[in-house]
Amino acid sequence: MRSRKFLKLEQLGLDWHGPGLVAGVDEAGRGPLAGPVVAAAVMLDELQPIKGLADSKTLSPRRREQLYDEIRAKALCSCVAEASAREIDELNILQATLLAMRRAVEGLRLRPNLVLVDGNRLPVLGMPARAIVKGDAKVQAIAAASILAKVHRDRLCLELHERYPQYGFAAHKGYPTAEHLLALRTHGACVEHRRSFAPVRSVQASS
Image (cartoon, rainbow, N blue to C red):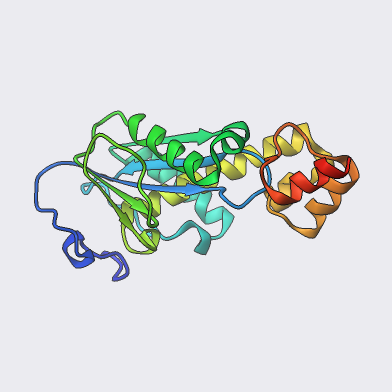
């Protein structure tokens, strides 16, 4: 039975009664000081329901990994895309996030008739789209996208940790923790740090 927290489109006030495929979109990694911002787009298969979908932030890492594999296996199609740290610095974090979202939608094997995006901003797309605040807690496809984006980005941070162990990316995932800020002051910024973000910019200015 579908969780009560996931509402039908008409309950969300969306005037959508046409046939076709619906994709959910979400992102991960807007707040960290390093690495790309990641977006995912997912079209779920109603004939293969996935139990336990929820906002990725409410799930344990182990449960996210389990659901990641199940989503990949059961969804009609899905795509994960990125905007790099350099693109974030060139465009700003909002525009880079919207770029990653557009790349994720355009990378889907099937073309959606409607795209539902978590938040209050929409990327430029070639099909109808709606922004839904807290959509990852309301729409299953967006929740699935949040899980794919989060797991993908966490895995990228493990790779960053192997390349730059002095920063501790495996633990803080790039967020501005005390450990990360101390490592920045000690070692300076690496190529994956976002130089447009104030803590990184201040380290660059003082070095």
